[in-house]
Image 1 (cartoon, rainbow, N blue to C red):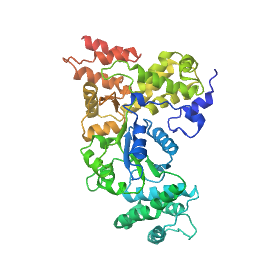
Image 2: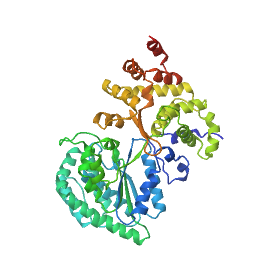
Image 3: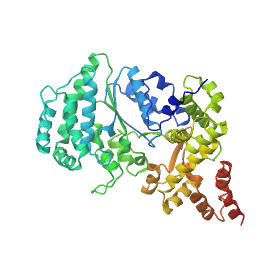
Image 4: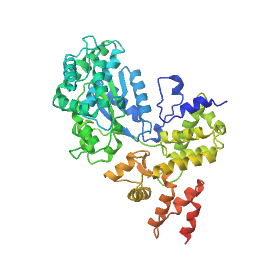
Length: 473
């Protein structure tokens, strides 16, 4: 079978989310649930469809940025639609300035996206409350915004949100006006948008309305004047208001909140007592460092599916040398990615920028070292000490330092069967001279010496040989 280079190049673009409604792109999808700690999407769907089909639910979903959450949420959308629900999925980053988000921003974004989606299905809602509010806002902001009685609700809200997203000054003035009216806005969204829409959908044979708000996990972690981080303020302090919308809700939230002392408050106020569902990395190694063949095989298939989407999984491995100079080269990439899907695709994409397949081991080693050095630039001496500790203990603490390492993808989380979970450093860092040199110093006289790191790095063909002599001395 011949490799279609252009399609392979496009399919490996790490910034691209699979459009699962498209049959051709569905062929690229590989189900990783068997090695990610459970069938998370099925659990989210069951909560909506089976446990409380008539009452609004609010569920939380998180994981490392780039680990595949958006793809899984689109799977959730497809599954719920098959079960008779009308699903509105949108990426909140299109409407919001992620460095500066307030609860009213999220409410307005939901109102706009839901009304826009419904308008496309010929459900056109009128909202007297919003018509009045938006006219008042136009006068307040002194912006050239013209509204007509015939104008659709979604486009009216968009005129406001587009202006304020681009201007911090306008955003601040808008917030001062909207904050005292949050309860009224929430009530209007429910009574004039969500409930009428749900009733109309049920008359059309739908079981209900589901809104999936993606990319809220990208909210900036900056500290507010109150001393609270922006995620704590938005999802914990204001979580009850986000949960009161009268439709089924799924929010993505920052991974750092899972390891915060605010977790119980988050579960109570936004999650309805339930904790967030976490999408972990694909394990390429067991907790003890041995190869995890099931995870490796899924990653191999994930890469080769993008090269040969129409080939059956059993036959793809036999085509490895059409893409790489050897199967060992593909395995090297899978291990270096740490099981992070976007990292894996990103490494391949960089290689494709350098040369056409079959990709050489030399090219891949160069790309791995380039990416590793990019990560190193952002790591302080204190961070190196924390990373070595995580590498030894396979565990983290819930403080801000470890949360920062998670957020910057210096540390990955893995889950096995049952309640097993562990953490480890990004494999790209484990081979850098900064990590290895510090490990030699840190581990001197301890049973957990640097030999393990050295042997692993040497096996991968890196520069570590020069460090062996220092150990022997």
